[in-house]
Length: 93
Figure 1: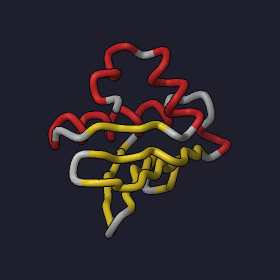
Figure 2: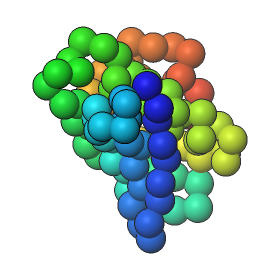
Figure 3: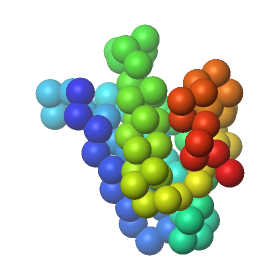
Figure 4: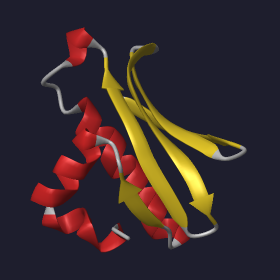
């Protein structure tokens, strides 16, 4: 599974690709120099249960740590992951 991060103007996203095909996407809004808001997660049905959402979230968390950015998880999936996963809570706003 390959996870790509892209940003355009005030939006960003993580794109999960498997064998060149989209497996999922997680979008975020850039709310300032040091803040992003994860607002949506989608996983293609054939990839359900394969930790695609978790892999995308961890890629965004790694980017946030590198850039010293905090995250507000508005997306229900991301919010649930932050609640139950202590090792990523350091980037929460």
